[in-house]
Length: 210
Ligand code: B12
Image: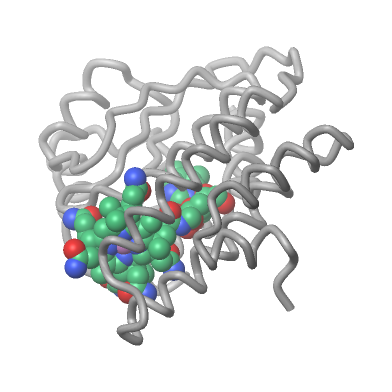
């Protein structure tokens, strides 16, 4: 069953949604739980889009309300104060894909946990990923993708990284609701997540391993 917040965002009720977000922040709820409830509603919105009940305009509207909710919630993420040694992460949404809400949540959580994040943005080509890894030499690369169509560019990116002799010592994590074990193996990544919190835990384990 959907909660009040997920329901009002799925119904695209902007004012009500933002009021609930503010109320939940005011009573001291964990920011990540609020964001995950917002995210639940995006599944419903996606389903409505797929079934023809919603059109692109509704997806855009939903993304705008989600962004406004993030603007309220993200400043509330508490920094742990921990310094993560060699905790640099280069992250971007793959070529052909402009979805960035999930990536931006992952970045906010990673930063709150002390990681240094280089955000490449959206629609990032394999060559742009290669150039960024070459320049920054991070221990971790994160890629986001929500489109089935963007799986192939993700695979091409990892191949381009291998062809440039940059794969050794680099851990690659892929995220997005379209990800699963099979896709992770297919593209050649080291880990996959469909939840930013899990992703941050994996990245922490990796750098602590070093
Ligand atoms: C909002 C939205 C949009 C917005 C995006 C705005 C933006 N700035 O991002 C707009 C309107 C632009 C859009 C456009 C399109 N969309 Co759209 N969109 C959505 C929707 C409703 C929500 C996505 C979202 O933000 N979810 C909330 C976030 C928080 O969840 P998340 O991304 O999974 O992220 C979480 C985790 O996965 C993880 N994570 C994500 N990335 C990463 C990366 C790392 C490194 C880590 C550690 C973790 C991590 O952390 C996040 C928090 O837990 C989805 C529906 C759905 N079910 O996902 C469709 C959906 C993704 N879209 C879809 C489609 C088809 C499109 C369009 C092609 C539509 C069209 N006809 O033009 C275009 C494509 C544009 C393009 N080239 O990319 C389809 C994709 C189908 C498929 N399998 O390929 C979906 C699934 C809808 C559907 N059911 O049909 N869309």
